Image: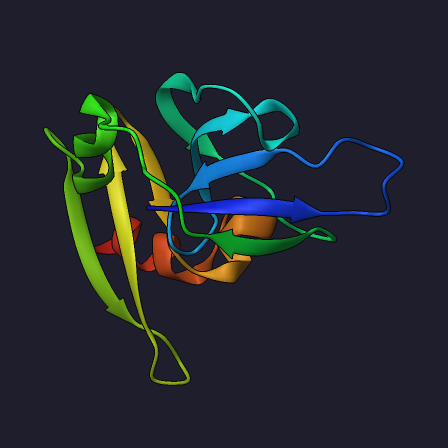
Length: 119
């Protein structure tokens, strides 16, 4: 988990976000990058397309929900992609998730389909 400052065209405020390392899940944010962290109840999928971010070194808050990334009570599989990269497919509360770029954009991918066939 890392803090990222959104870089923009100064038309919109540049918030600071608390994101997973691959920027696919958000845990919290700071409005205009100032003040206290506003934490979400549970991490949710974050769309970073067409946006630019810069990692910021800052004190990160302690988050109880951090265990959700480990899929507590769920299952996870490490899947090797067609180009040799490894991806994690997770099943938690009946919902599949994958760390690949395709899943981040389309909410479906061949890695999840492969796990569904195996399960």
